[in-house]
Length: 299
Image (cartoon, rainbow, N blue to C red; front, top):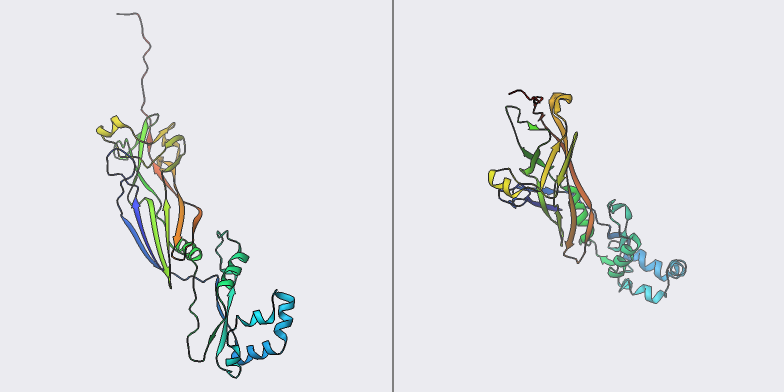
């Protein structure tokens, strides 16, 4: 299958509001996908005709299927015409649950029953091509999503004081998404005649600083004097300096969770498990020392 990926960045353009809406990251992937159901080569024309006419078909139907032999024959149209052909083959519908992805919650028996109901056996004379495999939309969508790697978030912050770029204990530290941090990802995959489109959307950064508290309901905006009056939707308040950490920087876990939906050209649609990217960055945190002077009555 061929997979194309585009994203809309969560990085702000500096204006009020969260997220900049700039498409900055893309990816093209070629990956393998195996259908859950396909046509499997069976016996020759001679083999199938002998099996049906010998009475074995009746025995098989009695133990495995409802219906009659005559009804069974309708699934092998003109089988008598191939009774002397020992080179051509019948291809029968076949399904295997091993090719369902781990997060595919569909019932395999329902998939199998639906496929077999819509796909009668097909006879292929010697030298002709076997039926092309068809990947259903749900399987294609899940395989396509599994084939791409979504960038983890990157952030910037303010205040950023001195050569180390330190913020301060007790102050609102503005945080915002930067670079290729996606807020929306669109994946388009094609395998044979089937196309699937997967859309993953996120609404905010999730921040977990050591020695601090984060409040984030969006992707933040860069601090400017103008924006300071409007406020931001993503801040951290650190309650201790970084002096006790290695390299004197405070670790901050950064996560983004994506809700995922898909549609496909065969009519399939649905949702997938939430996908979360995770990384850890560091921010140096300094402490402003204050000298307290006891007041006196002396002039």
